[in-house]
Length: 80
Image 1 (tube, rainbow, N blue to C red):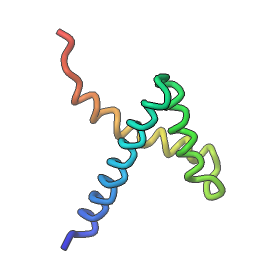
Image 2 (cartoon, one colour):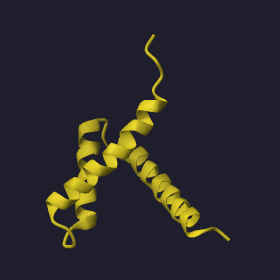
Image 3 (cartoon, one colour):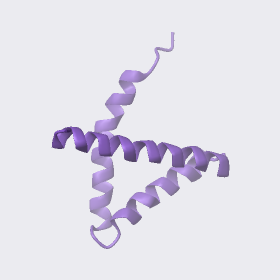
Image 4 (cartoon, rainbow, N blue to C red):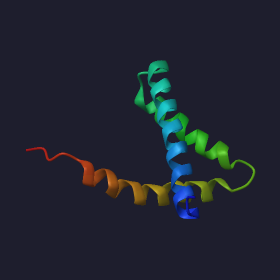
């Protein structure tokens, strides 16, 4: 049996997998990355609509980015 922390991570990975599937489908609908980016951000605001003010949602997104950016920076290949 998974611990609560392990279960939370498994739940996250399941949601992440679905999100990546959605991005793949969106790429086939629009080649414009900006359109996809904006649509995903709108989806985040819609997720919290009616329960949190927009400024709080923006702060949540910024907080997540502060966590995610270092992960992707560490995965970058050197340009040399």
